[in-house]
Every structure is written in C-alpha cells, then in structure tokens.
Image (cartoon, rainbow, N blue to C red; front, side):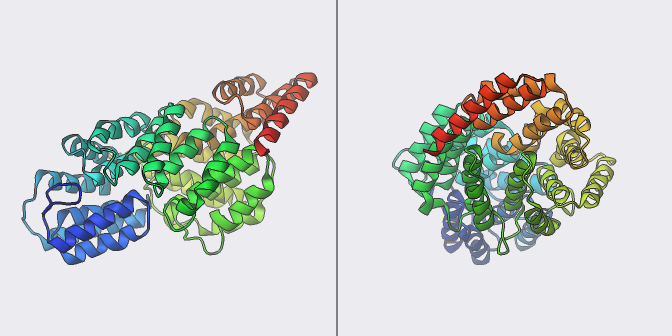
Length: 466
C-alpha cells in the first residue's frame, strides 16, 4: 500500500485511508486527528505508521500522562505484531517514538530529520519533527528541516500550504520576519485553513510590534482558526498580546475570559501556559488579577505532576505564585531538585530543567516575594539561552520582561537601561519598550526624557488603535 503522498506503508487499505485522514487533520491542527488515528489502529493493530502516529499525537501534548499513554500504544502495537519487520522508514518512525517516550526529544528529532531527508514527502516526519524543533527551541532546524523538504511539495499539492506554513514559522524564529510574513501569506493563500501559517504570520507581526496589522490579519481569518483547532486558544493569545501592546486592557481581559481560560477550558498544558503567560505580563505592569490567577492555578497539577517538560513547569509556578500559593510552587521546585540529583543520560528535559527551568521557577518565586535583585541574578545569566527549554521568541519574552522589571525594582538602573536599549533595537515601534525606557529615565531622575518617552509610547499606541 501507499499513502496519499506516495510512500509505502505496511497495513490494510482501510487503515491507510484512516492514516491519511489523520495526517491531513494533524497538518490543520484539528481535533479529529486523534479519532482518525485511533481508527487506523483499530483497522489494523499491526500497522507501524498508525502506531507511530498515535504515539506522536499523545507526546505532542507535552504532558506526562499522555507520554505514558504513548508508551502503552507502542507496547500494544508490538504485542500485536511480534517479531515482524517493516520498511526502514517505518522502523525509523518507531525508533523516533521510542526515543521520545524514553525522554530524548532531541534524538527523536534527529531520527525524524533523517527520514525527511530521504523521504521529503513524509508529512508525519516533517510535521512532528517541526514541533520537536519548537519544543526544544531549535530555531535553525525549525527553518532548515522544512526548507530542505519544501521543493518536494509543488504548488499543486494539497499540502503545499501547510508545508509553507511550517517554513514561515521557521523563518520567523530564525529572525527573517519579512520573509516569514511573505511565506506565511502564501501558505494561507494556498490553503486558507492552514492555521499554523496564520500563526506564523502573527508571529512575524509580533516580532516587529505591528500590533494593528496583527489584529487585522487574525480578525480577517477568524473563521479559519477561532473554533475547534489545537491552535485556537494560542491564536487568541496572540491577539491578546497585540491588544496589550496597544494598551487595550479591556480587550485583553475580555479575550482572556472568553477565549483563553474559563470554566469550560480543557485544562491542557498547551492552553494553560498561555493563560499564565498573559496574566504574568499584566502582573508585571501592576494589574491585579487575583481571581483569574486563582481560577487558573486550581487547574494546574496533572500537567506537571512528574518531570516531563520544563517549559510547562515554569508556567505552572507562575500560576501558583500569581494566585498566592508560593508553597505549592516551592514544592515543585523541591521535586525538580530531587529529579536533577539523579543523572538521566539522554533525557532532554533533564538538561532543560537544570539549565533554564529551575532557575526560571526560582526567579518567579523570588519575584512574588519582592526579591528583585535575586530575580535579576537568576535570569540575567540565562537570558541568551532561554531557547534551550523551548517555546517561541514571543513566549519566552515573558522572562525577558520579568528580568527588566526586576532590574528596575532592584534599582539596577544601568542593567535596566541596557536591557531597554536592546529591546528598542529589536522593536523600535513597541509602545511597551518606550514605556520601559520612560521608567528607566524616571528612576535616574531625568523627568524630561521620561516625558518624551511616554509621549512616544502614547503616540505609537494611538496610531495602532486607529
């Protein structure tokens, strides 16, 4: 049998058709991917690609319970097909799944990249490998993994759009914002349902402080992304960031309550970290959101009850300290300290926790206790290495903002000034950056310069709201 992209597959015809549908849903981030993948395995329990797909879909949640479920999926497959040999490509997919289940995301990503080089039309290897690059913060691989394969997907191919959407996100994370926008727009022209491409264009606007353009772009395509996709909450989060940049707090809170976290929220780590990151930004600016913090903090727990992904740990700690439950945050830190006390070989999360996760968690606790010099001491040495624990530039900016705010509150004016200058070099049109420069000038007694900075910030925000 061959799949929809012409690649040989071991399995019954019905299983291959279900697999094809699941991959199409995965490329569009639609929830039906799980049902279709499950049906593929039910049609043929001995299909290696169906087993790998089911395992990957669980691992992509970044939650320990789902990783355990992925291990069960692979174990059941091996029991259904004892001793069978499969094609080299299929065997490689199973090795990648085994590596990730064992905790080595980087090894899984390497195996999947080798598959993509030999089989550039393997959509599963390409899309899952792309997400692993995202989870491990490898900006160059985010770009180049897809760039190497893109020529195998001509314009007439129905999945050319999602492939370009992946390339657009890689270009953005690698710092090529104009080409990211151009490539992402082309992806969405080819496939208006390419929510990852829409997401990539939004990132390109975020990185250039083009908030008005970002809001307009998202709103014009809301029908494609705003309902029932795995990126729905995240794209609402991006829209809220644009509103926050423009100083529209009412819209930020309305979006948070209706779209990001509420009583009917699924409680997924990938959604809840968006809630924590947004409320933390508000807290840094002195906005008291105690009730929202408490509601969010109550839902964190199972997603981080075992060490699996340090990026999630940091956002859980943010939620707990934001809600005033510093003791719970400290318990997670103590648990991760015990985790690090035992060397774990190739476990990706071990290095992520040691290098970035644990210092960032400690910094969040120190911020809540008003120990701002300690926050600066914890975050400044790791600020150029934050990518090592995953996420995007936009997501990791919450820690850069925390460092800047603590430098100001600790009266480290020279450090705060340097950080603001860096930010303005990268985003000269950001109202937030100009407001922070005003704060620095006020702190050193230069009221005239502060007033001019405030005027510039207000001017930029007003222009963005028009």
